Image 1 (cartoon, rainbow, N blue to C red):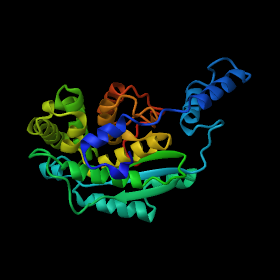
Image 2 (cartoon, rainbow, N blue to C red; image 1 turned 180 degrees about the vertical axis):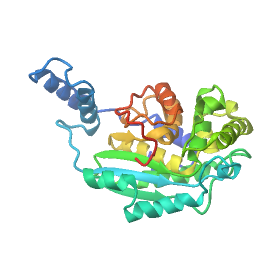
Image 3 (tube, rainbow, N blue to C red; image 1 turned 135 degrees about the horizontal axis):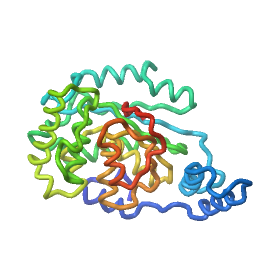
Image 4 (cartoon, rainbow, N blue to C red; image 1 turned 30 degrees about the vertical axis):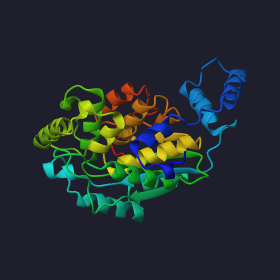
Length: 308
């Protein structure tokens, strides 16, 4: 089954059950090579396991990073109406323009590292519906955004990094996390762009209302992603699942991207084995969410930008 052929959540769920496995032989070769090096066993720490992981998914040793790509997806959220952000929804489009002009932090990182940067805005003029009033998207809207993400990945990519931009999307990420893993709304809700106490209170309340309003306790993980997510979150998932189908290793960035992928790991455990968490975000709930997914971040630099 190809991603382009998917028309329903049921078909997407079926696709997740037939994803390719890692290339075991390449991983074993990498492990044997590490053991032969003149050094104490395990002296390179996680660097050793990262090399083995790359070899597993690229299917070769030594692994190569010749065509890395950073794909940033942008979307707008109706829940901004609830006063959950320090910025208006218009800032999403302004940031997309900044990316395209080369003025954002990720532009500098990609230029320095020789990484191809793609910025994919998705219907910014049509925000998702307000999740405190009902579902953010229909199934067809979710799948359409998922396919946009999949189509954005170039076939020759050998390492994919994914990030996002969307005013209000940490509210969606908190709601998804709360619906999937339980607890109280405040356990999953943080300051995002740096909101004050009053705005944070509105944000926590909005997350709680959204989870209750959408009757999330009666929905499966992908249905929760539809009801509480956003187009850029769906696109991140599409890019990552396309990468899995083509054995492209993935680094994902931040709380929002992690929340975008969580429903897929719940639906099909192991579907994110080709992914590593690039870093631990300063957003308080990110570490908790990574633990739920059994993902250990590579870096902890106190960042909270989400741009990939």
